Image (cartoon, rainbow, N blue to C red; front, side, top):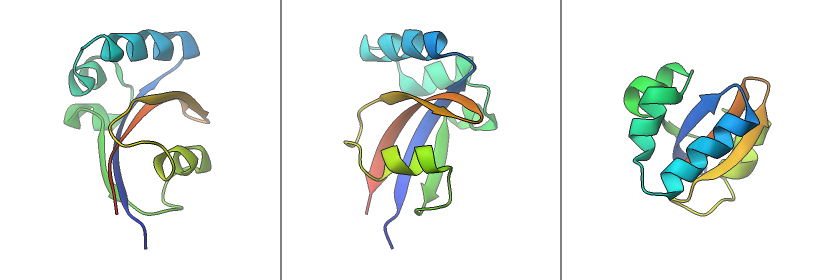
Length: 92
């Protein structure tokens, strides 16, 4: 079965998500931005969600995580939890 590892940042608005994406693309560290801004408990690990398989996350996550380029910030991705920036760190 396919497995992926990813990290994310969860915020409550698309505007904030876009602002943080611009900061990361401008050179800020993803983990640092996650620790400072993400409302998900994973913020303590710099947004790291660990390893998971298809169907273990919400469908919007799966769609990005199992198709997007590695190590490139994706988003905003809207789910029932809010707006996410996602970075797929590995896939096997």
